[in-house]
Length: 174
Figure 1 (cartoon, one colour):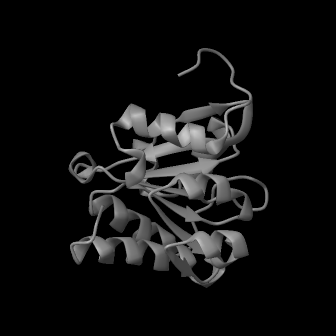
Figure 2: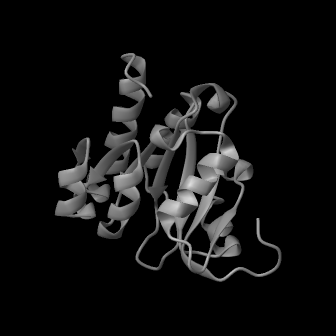
């Protein structure tokens, strides 16, 4: 981790993990930023994201916010107390940052699951092991996706989490 102030380009990753995460060795990445660039967990998403963590997945939240704003925004979610910050310095793209996070956590890059919420998630999504694209991620992300969901406002994140947990329970987890 860099010392001192960090200039943020496009992301801060917030790894959140439960007790079983080390045995699953899979990481789910999602950008939960609202229009102001601050992470926001919508009604119903808390339980869906908690289910991923309880099922043994490590969750990383990407955001453009600085640590203070992101912690304040995520404090309404009970998992926020387990959040660790991994800033992405200026000049490092999201795919490289995700690769660094995977190395730091001992998770093979091919075992990442990206839930794409915006069109600019495409370069990152193309590197992930599995891609689930929400409606607002755009046509290119949807075309590359292993699965697609409705928009976030219509429960897309909840649906994506259910797909991941269901896949694991059916024995198809990575």
